[in-house]
View (cartoon, one colour):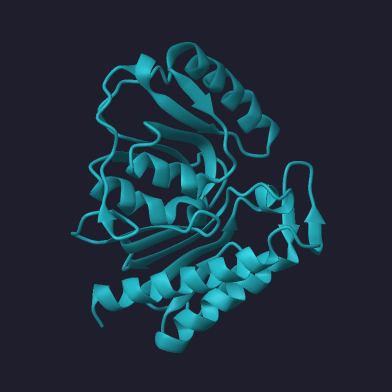
Length: 251
């Protein structure tokens, strides 16, 4: 099958999941886990199951690696990386800033990425070797080169160590750039970098499913991504996604 076929599967799955989330937005929700800095919804599982059903119906030999678990043939060279609701806390509090994120990697290399904001009906998409798109139109990263004119999003995850490291960085950015944001959806942050709304997105500890679709998106939009495995947490990463055109005070 071609990359076009895989991309269409991702687009269809994201659209279906987005419609499901829109229909449930603002309605009573079942909470599976209410953690100190996070919420796990029963709706997360149902949304991932919907995405899985579409993907595996068309590509039954593929693997699924999602926030809500693994399914499919885990020995396959094709692995779909899914975050069914990126921004679950926002969703729970009826803040309309969250996304569906779907990526496909083949033999370890990401070849398709889709990020869908169902509340604004904005669909970012990309396939290997082609321009990054927003609702079908080519996009590019910001051309700003002066840090003082830039807008940067800094993510801080849910451990004491990452909070202790993230807050000083956030303060440094506040003093150096035009505006600093903490928006609650990593995939939308990285999509915003790809289309020039943000100049950079920085987070010290993030899961692959939060950012996988955006990695290729930013690179094909002309930007730069630094993704490094976390030194002590397996399956976690640090990330700097930027336009690549501005020097930020990261140290």
